[in-house]
Image (cartoon, rainbow, N blue to C red; front, side, top):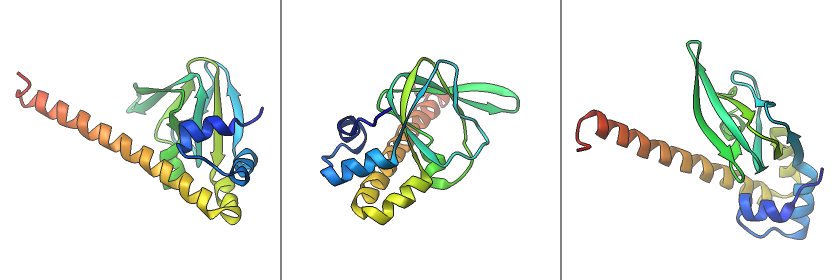
Length: 156
């Protein structure tokens, strides 16, 4: 399955890539089709891969003390696995396809190999990942503030 570089420019990089960079992206990223029910990432396992959802949606679930908790849904244009990719930690959640999904995968090894060929593309990729991580933290901070406000009774 081929990588759609124009789609990645628009939905992931949000910046125009040179023809050389597009060729490198097509070489280093991998397109994988998952079917409904397929586990893409398993909580507690090493992943070190970032996934960009081209189409479809996934369920993100966390297990704590034997209890399964759905912590979100990711859909077209969203990233999954970026925390493990950046931190080198094991996966903090299980991600399962809710429907057929096409994802673009970038392994840490492919990322490091890409570094040898185009440092500008590597920097752009890493900055994109950091921005997405910052957006998640910002969203979580807003949710935490709302919960604290609700719990303190000042929501009235």
